[in-house]
Length: 256
Ligand code: SF4
Image 1: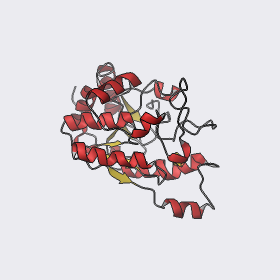
Image 2: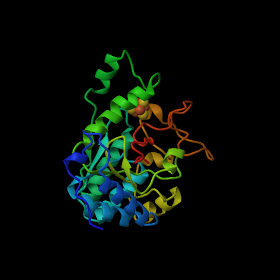
Image 3: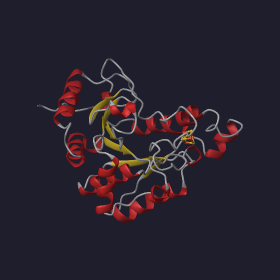
Image 4: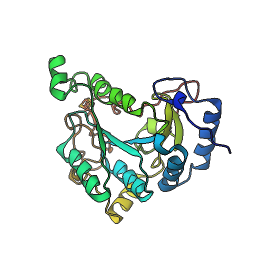
């Protein structure tokens, strides 16, 4: 089919939803690539969106694998990390490992306030008392800013991680941020990810070898015991299981 050009009107600053043509294209591609591997999905996304494609990574193992695939595609996709000020030292070290291995400089996207300024403003850290606000201020708002002007973004979610993620498609409209979202690893499970990471010596966060299958900010992440759900160490003891970046939101029926 003829591919519609995604222009400025599709940027995240104007929450208008996809045009009917784009919505149809997304539905068609999501169906066509539903059983495709991550490299094929990424190749499509790079070809389709070019410099208007971007990627957010928290330097988890899935994000590292996608970066590995992007490097093989010789793509110049802008990759960024939401640096909340609360990340583990081991997480920040992954950025250096990626630079050494691929020559790729992952950009830091930061909130407007430093960690110290933020805590002073609120009389202390919010992650223990109001984690939703903390994630909104230090992840969601910076992400919205980072996605402005882009037509599509790549995420590293997997379908088997949460019920919300189980509803996602490999290519979908992201109603929350008003652009196309590409999920190349959606249908892979943890063992498939690790198999390639270990075989191809993809750099990864050393915390994964210390009982941290899912890694977020340091104050909100603990190691997990054998047999526990892989996200049970995120906001342990709280109902919260997502930072708000990948929560299902519907808009005009076009959301995931
Ligand atoms: S994960 Fe924790 S520290 Fe990080 S932004 Fe969310 S609440 Fe704040």
